[in-house]
Image (cartoon, rainbow, N blue to C red; front, side, top):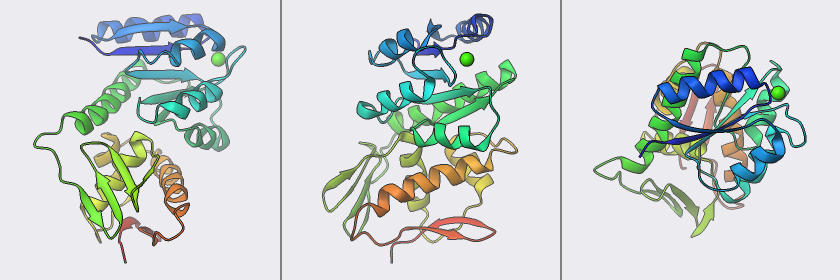
Length: 231
Ligand code: CA
């Protein structure tokens, strides 16, 4: 069964171009040209990946992303944005999106990113033999269930946040640069996207720090990158 992708984009020509590209690449595609239709489709739970334009009539892409994430932390979401500003990027990420593309983008880049997102979500579902649970004190990282818990309470992470902590915690004490994390966690290394890593790390950290008694585990090594250490 082919993977089903939802495109919510009000620029009809662009939506059609993305649709044709993804169909030719072997995916099943549904699309909506306004936010309201997009939102109800997005909440139907029928999709393996969603691409959401930010500026949409009626309901914007960020709101769709936010509402999807209320009940679904793991379906990959890619934001499409016309505004190449830091604010938009970070806002998109704070709503729980996994990746974003700034218009204009090349259609080959889009296809590569979609495949990278699927590779990552497949890896976490299919990886065999199943990776072992990682346990640090009362912090438990369970790759098979894609779950992180502290003192038996689950910590809600997006799939990207999970992949990040799982990757870092699989190599405790080892420092990784942003570029290495893009390679290993995102599956591509696109020059200029290093700040994507910072945003996801910050969000992951905020969620971990909300657990009062959990010691700091994601450490910044200034000028180098990040490492996991449970002290
Ligand atoms: Ca738009």
